[in-house]
Length: 174
Length: 191
Image (cartoon, rainbow over all chains, first blue to last red; front, side, top):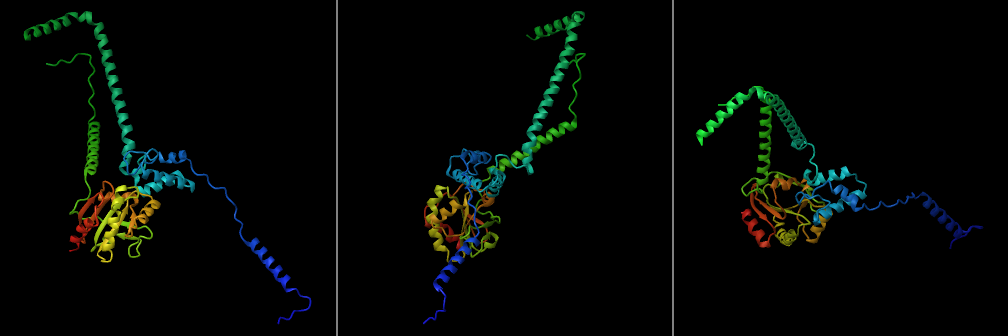
């Protein structure tokens, strides 16, 4: 038999203690702020990145227009990565690491790939130089010929002689 | 008989160093083109060739003897079946059951190993595929397509059979039609 002390209320004391404990726990628990969820990236946002990637399976097909199931999975992967806050460069690097550099629309500027960027402008420049020199020489020839034509009356006799000789030769061969 | 007309400016010859440079550039381009074309015309690795070494990091849950990564060199002495597949590959689904049952037949021997190489795939879909077809042999992704480039595969599914010495003995392009077909290839390599 429990002996009660004079003046004590054990039920009330226990209830009060439990209430205080609960209050203390609630205060001690870290409060987590509720964040607004990141909106799901739109198709345009996904395709903005997919446009710069090529389907690793189908040749020469950009990822944004590739109709295959595999491409749909990769676009979903891009969407997921965007929603996780990945940047475009990080997503591209991920695809390069996973599937090789050939998935990039632009070859990386390493090794022999530099030729792709350097040679076409060089060829265009060479073509422009050749064209410029040719035009200049044609112009020089044309300006040289025009004084000759003005002097034609004084050299008519030799020109006629040449023409006459040419006609004789042609007659012999006909 | 040619006659030079008086007053025509003499044409300047292109400097010799420019000619050499142009010819060297053209020949260099032709060499690069030839190398690229010959590479693209090479077929898959052929039977009789030694298979180069590669490392395959396995999906978690599909390890081999507790190892998360396997190396071809480390598997010498075993007959290997290297199967290239992808979750988006419909023909691969046709042979999944055959591979599963063949693996069940050989797995306790210890001298035969099936390795699945997941080609340009995404991990969630790959795992779903493995689970769907109850494939339990070691599988891993072909990161950077290095392994598939080494074998010069043309598509999936393709399966390569390597003997105990690391020599490629058979190439199966396309799905297997039966478990018996797999065993008919593996059994002679065990002798």
